[in-house]
Image (cartoon, rainbow, N blue to C red; front, side, top):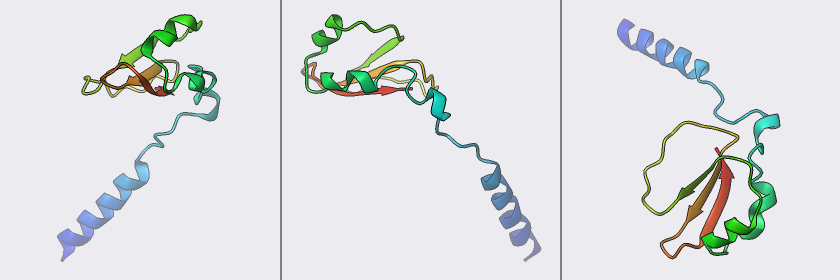
Length: 90
């Protein structure tokens, strides 16, 4: 019984230490994705007509992704036909 209590207390302590995964409000849109939402549904080539100063990562279906969060990076999800599905920071 004592081990169960120690395990439960340890689990709760670790859960309380978990850092908030959301970016700070001042960094939430530092890549400019919000201003580019008009590109959703457009072909990937439409990105060439935009002035994008943020580092950009194009993500086709099944692409390998790093899990690092970089609020200044623009991510562009495209489908298998090259149509832009989503633009987001991270």
